[in-house]
Amino acid sequence: MEFTRRLLDWYHENKRDLPFRQTKNPYHIWVSEVMAQQTQIQTMIPYYQRWIKVFPTIKDLANAEIDVVLKMWEGLGYYNRARNLHKGANYVMEHFNGELPADKHKLMEIPGIGDYTSSAIAAIAFDLPEIAVDGNVKRVMARYLNYTENVNTRKAHKTFENFLKEELLKSKASPSDFVQALMELGALVYTPSNTTCEGSPFKEMCACYRGENIGTIPYFPKPKKVPVYPKTAWIYTEHQHILMSKDDSDGLMKGLYRLPQTDNHQKKKPIMKLTHKFTHLHWVIHVHKSENILEHENYFLMPIENLKDITIVTAHRKILQKLGYIKG
Image (cartoon, rainbow, N blue to C red):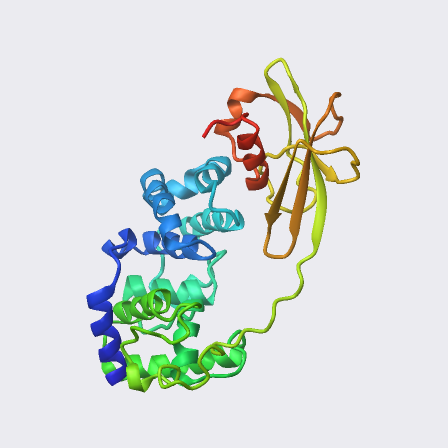
């Protein structure tokens, strides 16, 4: 219980004032958890606030056109998160009468909601005794327990989850506060760069703080080398129109607009060059102007003034902004 007492004392004194902490609305918490995955908190806050303003309820989201949903998500990347929120909202309308169920296993029936998100919603929104183990929590627990093995395994997950659930149940603390405190501690104190865990509320209780294996915990295996693909993005304009594409045959960013793009075989100097990183591959994009219109069933001319109103692949939006076709 000492673990929980110290954790919650630290949390109540140091927690950030975040908009999604002002609500117990399960839908709002769902949105915030999905947005926070792979996006920095300070970056996602304005997106969260706009989203809730436009789609204040699950019904509003379910009734929205997918193009509108994707446009609202533009800038956050990883667009499957937005698609899954939209699919999930429709599923909740059909199967749960528009209300997220207060049950982890039922939550996991919803498209896009897995073990982590279901645990987070159950604990934070419904105060159910579930443990959400994300990267922040893994750092806290690996250092606290002096866990030297790979933390990205089922074994590590169960070790951390079992320890934390036992602590939670013994203390009879609020699961909502307990889970959010762990996340916050990992985000603010047990950071990747703060290997000494300076500021930890656990002090002598923490193996890392005692000086054991400083700088080596948590252990993550080295990531695999990411393949790099050279690409050519084409700029063709005529009469205040620009050639755009909806060719997503590469399986990336389905349904988003983009510039015509091909494998790069150009020897002449590009007008600009840009590297765009996905989790599993990188594009090195050479931008060229085309003197002639390119033919493809998914290529079409669009008024340049309309570019600001459509959802464009992030890398290509950056190109269009740098070349002055999109302002701001």
